[in-house]
Length: 376
Image 1 (cartoon, rainbow, N blue to C red):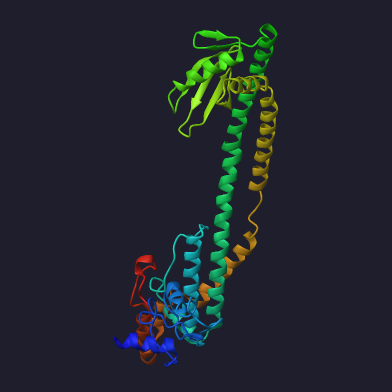
Image 2: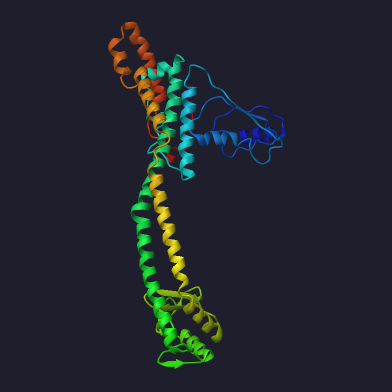
């Protein structure tokens, strides 16, 4: 049996009490959870997924304990706080992608954002400004995401009152005018020809059962997926709409169209046809209410569009403070300044700092999904 496998078995049985290992060696596939009561993060990994894999060794099905203690160790005056801040930002970035929320344009890893001398000195000496900078950076990122969401919402609102609702109002208004003309034509037809009569093909039927029978027969010959004219009813063109869901509709066409689902019986179909014809005026009330609703929605969109960004002042203040901190920490120019001003002793100290910086930044590259698997 493999030595590691044997050790894991002894962990599960309780014979071994402590397991120390890296994320690679004691991550995915390691099952030692049976009696596990605590997990200790001695260092901060590069990726949120590594933390998830570590903690997944204990927080999983098969652990006989109701609770598992998790400890994270941070040493003051080291890179620990900075590294945990980076992992936090990565997890926030990943969560935004997974939940379809607004995300920032990029995510920098410590590899790419290589620490300058000033950053190294600030962290190594426990400079409180570096802690404030991390907090300010997080606040700025959060506020920028809120601002991006606000801007996106405004684009949608602008589209609403400039394009969407004007178009809907125009279409509904035109249809309302057509319905009113159709209602006038219907009323005149009912006065001139009050008796029941339906034309299917070239034949006219005055009995509902006959008209319904011939209409259903004509419908059976129509093609599925098409709207086909089959006759006339009180001056309106009569069509049938057949779809692939095997649901058929009768359509009356005047200045606009009116639709109702067909019945499977001849008389039932005629009753539905007459109800559709006699109820044309009901579309007037419906469309008037729709137009009013569209007008209200248009005005509401304008009102919402004009509202300022609620956190505008806070964002400006945070950005200003961020610039101040960057200047104080000399994040961009400290390397050149240190090199110019250092004497023999200072040069040796600078060399030591350069070596520390090189260790931190030796693996350059943007944090991305294809770099999974690299841990500290």
